[in-house]
Length: 157
Length: 121
Image (cartoon, rainbow over all chains, first blue to last red; front, top):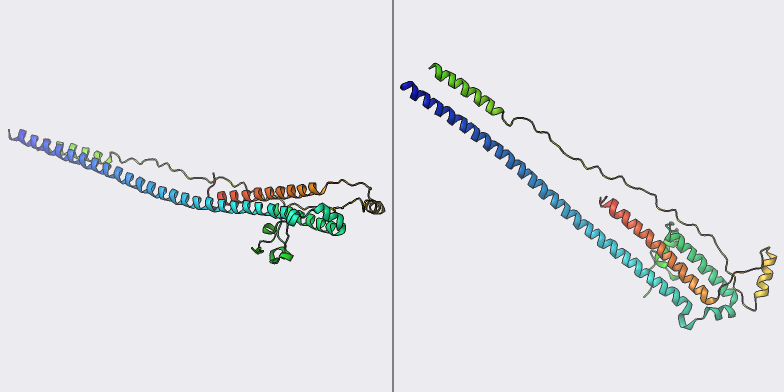
């Protein structure tokens, strides 16, 4: 009788210990999973922050680039208007002028052609000369494309 | 007592093996991002324009101009445009130059955006 009770107690004790062991193991596994989840979440948040930061940087870069291109296109419009003005300013008729002052107009046309060729070279990526960079006066600039040829020239408004 | 010891031994073994459950090492798989190779084309070589000479011919100086050409050993023939067409030509030239500048600028901006800010795709 006594040994049966002892055995029952022992079995209960062992079952209890085993149950506790399994329970502790489950807790440990849960803990490990939670830890892994926490690390994953932290990494995800960090990555999201990085993505947001990069998006912000990209947006600024795109805005800046757009602004630059818009300025360039406005400069183009102004250059074309200036070119038209040179031909038609004060009802100027270049044909009539050429009849009256043939040699002078020939000189001007050839000078203009040379300047226009230089503008194409610069537009295709040629390096500026020192004189082009230093030009600040109207008499020193390339009037065909001052914004391109003479970056330091500020036209008088 | 004998039974008790036996049961204790079994329980001890169960406990020991229980500790090894879930103890296997897991294979860790991680990926390393290999950045795409840069294209690195050099920028187009700048143009070198050749010089041309414009002759202005009127009804008055035509003979003189042709005579000078002959004296210089050049065929006395000229390909002419009117003053209005000259204006158009100047405008066309300006537009071509602007397009060239715009394209080069775009190229630089693309290069800057995708290479400087690390937005390689």
